Image (cartoon, rainbow, N blue to C red):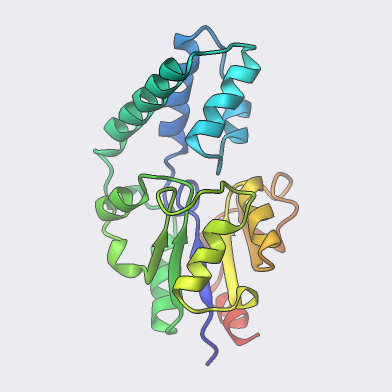
Length: 218
């Protein structure tokens, strides 16, 4: 049996922390007089905290001093962390656990490739951290998606060639990063938004074990 490396994004793929990010970013934007919509929140998916705040400032045609910029980033993260302290296993998205368990049974590498700097505490809260062979998050990389650094590091940690890696992503930037790394990209979410993905599924309930077996074989 071929050993492949399956790389999961975190937010919107394993858990839906997007709602917490939305609330925290909206509160931040409103605090500096900038409107913030769900459509704008979509554009921040898979984007680093620093780049996200830059986008919000651009949308509001607003500038900040360096110290105010750093304060806002810290405040946003503190508010977000406050939301995720209440997370538990019930917040796992449908069939994620089944997918991960099947890959473990099939002796495949299960890894994380996320922009989030809070990935490890979330995996602890959801009792999933022991399921991962390698974790690469925002603390481990210098380049944000669509740069493929996060996925290439996951491949390196498992000693897997990029063309033997499969990436599950819910963001455009994440799909572009997977494609740039020459990995198999699987979009989880709206296929019209994630049209650059090699395969598309609304969620893991649509993704069968037999499909995973095919990915492992070929």
